[in-house]
Image 1 (cartoon, rainbow, N blue to C red):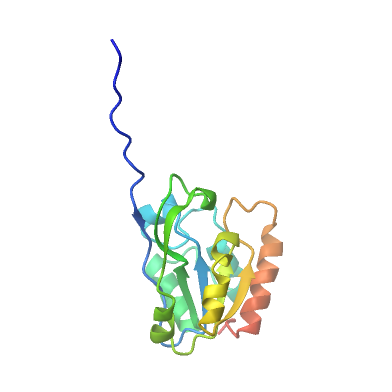
Image 2: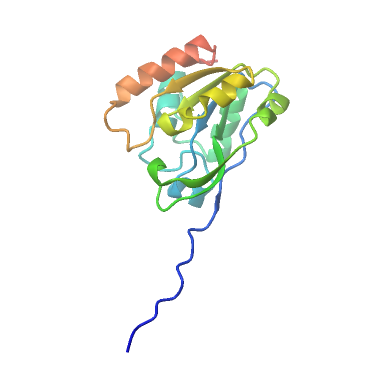
Length: 176
């Protein structure tokens, strides 16, 4: 007797997180798409080993990691920093960017409407940076930052911090 397997179901379409921007946003950091831990928590950079929050803590001299998530976001908005991702939806098993399939871009023109002071978009890692030309075509200055992901082990925390600090200084997104 031959066994029959049920039809393969495609990986479900995952939905990203909403943008964190305000009318005072001057710099937006774009990731690629939230990882599993971030989607579960419904929080940007929700994986405990991601360097995003520790890097911002070091740049600004405050302990964002110890703050509740809503307070972290309020602090970003207060300082003129926004967060979003390149993709609004995709299919992906796990959290690695290489596994992203059927990706759908976010509406980047929406950034111009929501954040009229926005001048610079920084891409957090290589997958996000693949969209640089789209953002540049909208008139934004674009920059590529080293990924804060724990998968980016080739860059030390100190080296990542230096690159992030330099861009934040250039955009006047510093301690206030």
